[in-house]
Image 1 (cartoon, rainbow, N blue to C red):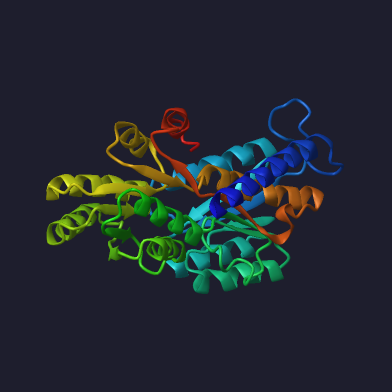
Image 2: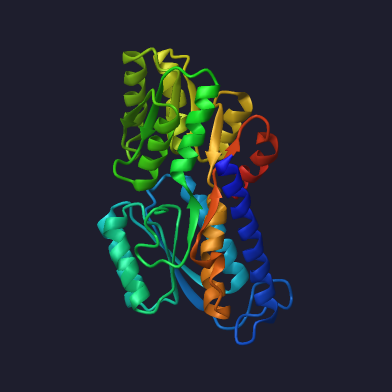
Length: 327
């Protein structure tokens, strides 16, 4: 119930922010104008979006799709860059500061490494919002907003759903050790479903991911659920289940076209969607509103874009959006 209320509040804030974007684009003096319904005109701001994306992870396509849609509408010059290594991601943030961008949107998967340089951007007078990762840390480093999911709450929701679906034993697969959002998800699962074991894999080696899950399922046939934290890992887990001859059910966080098809067929039970398209879109939009109209969307509080369940009850409608890379 708690997560449902938070999601409702989050979507309400997103709706308000979107309306503000349209209003400001049409009428703000000195800002951009959008009088013909197309891309905004006027002063062109440069916004840097800096993430911990690993190449090949389709999740980030949705983040970028949302960010690029907002940038196109608002006449923003979007500079996207990424590095999965925290130190290198921090360097990218410093590069954005040095190039004097107008705003920065950054993920805080490794906040100890990236947070201080994000804080340095604020001290340099650059507006900064955090998104996707860093729910517990964004205020510590003076970010002005956070767009994403409370991953602990999301994990707890998954654990409760597993418990109500027959229980047994779960293995929660973390594809990047030390990533705060991923660790929080599995910790949340374990809170509401204590019979959960953590399994670490490396998402940069997908064949090894699948073989590691195969070995685990063969070693422990009592496992009834495999919980993955990303769509590509879910597909690897599905292959591992078949390879191990296991009857374990698969649940995952996040969504792509292939996972949507597997939910439709019943091969994957459900996905917990944090709506990355919304995260990218609102990160750019909130910075633009701040730059053009002095807005502080959310009043210094986080805007929760998830968790939201995707399962057989709603996949028919959602699959069309997954196919066009917006869900």
